[in-house]
Length: 325
Image (cartoon, rainbow, N blue to C red):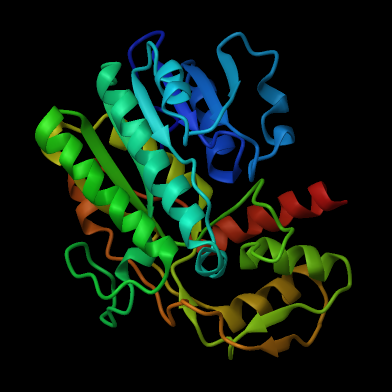
């Protein structure tokens, strides 16, 4: 079962931080689809207003423009909230190496502000975005919770710190927290623009425009690419999980492994073109291979992802074709 048949108490209120972003806006849409209420908090620094414009006339939707670095904003946003889905963060490993102080303030202090506000306002469940980057240089595949290596970027440090703070809030304050270690999420509304854009939307957009994409490294990196609907399922099932599953972090992926060069060739084939890529240098702080063991999330959260990479990439290509015209 995915997420569309999940049941929450009537009139439940979800706060989605970073709700105008890629993952956040998809969560808002799914929650509204379940008949629940959504409060979206976003400062629009990386999120986009157009991602949430479609909800503006829904009486169960509310938008707050605000920054999680401000505790007072977080306190107001948590008023009357049942479930927090904390997606607000700045991504990108290379950018974090350029901006370490900002990543500390935004990703660590911002999450800590949200944890404190959720505690004070009596939120039932606090689900937050972590990342597969916390595995660092641990070489063993598949990646398994409890077997982490040396962290390779300030971004990874920020996500690992979030996990440790969340554990403290479960241990000392009784706030049920659930960390979701996302593995290379892709799908509708993921931003294809900018120097730090995720590889799948960036490649699709460039190929649709007749441009030549650049692959960082040799293309033989592998990733556990995870379709957005699997991520929605994990977030919502974490909200329904018991206290015994709280205070921990979980891999959220499909459990597969795709090589970048194969994905590039597959996109060419799907679009009916044949564009030879350029190859650039490896990105600083990147890991070579990534593949998730999702057995812990299956067991403790009831996570059972339905969307394989092959199924998801077809949907994503169709969405970008329509969106990019």
